Length: 299
Image 1 (spheres, helix red, strand yellow):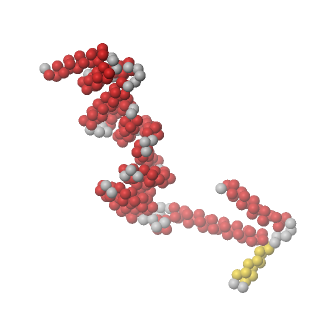
Image 2: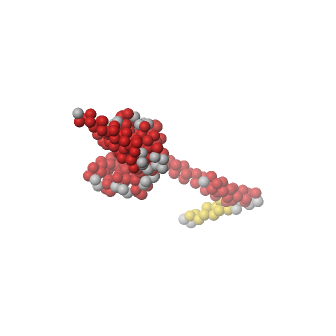
Image 3: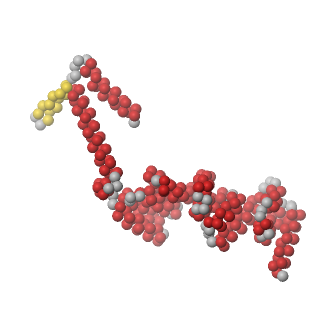
């Protein structure tokens, strides 16, 4: 833009200074309604530049008015916050009814008149994600990014991560979610999304490491967390059993807390995979431990 301005000024300067230096300014003649107006070419250029300057000033003033959040600005832009609020309310009803397509349309329409267009775009993007319309969701996030304020950044990032999970962009989503975990380690939704990403990537050790935080933040009910914990540990045992080094599983097992080592479900799973790996001595130790625990429970 700056280069174009320089070229324009050079051309204007050439038109203006050329005739002046040669001693002949030329003339410009205008005939309007039988009136003949004659002026020098330089005078014509000066008047033209002044006219352009006036037009720019008028444009700048109107732009300020149009972009203002006053009643006049809203009226000039045909922007109605009340109408936008009604659309958002109706969109929420459609969302609760499961009509994601209609909800997304109303959220998008509300963005044109809402005082907070970012919120409308984010709601529309989230609705499209839930409806598996990933391309429109990505486009809506791009719109939201243009007006996103610092206080809306977390909501934007969380919706972006949900979209990345749907698109199976797990590495990108993991980078962002781990940054958010450092910033807000007790936020339940951040923890839930992190858990989902780790499961999708098959990083069961990361899931296990996240479990204490999940219990503290109460991201799910305790019974659900117990189920998730058991699934993560058994998946990790199975994962390590396929390692080329059979001792890796034994080393990992011995590094676990006592509560894990004394859990019958984990012991049975370990004994099963140790037998498959040919580690019969270690498997027999676990089977003896299991029989002792079971005999105590039966007595």
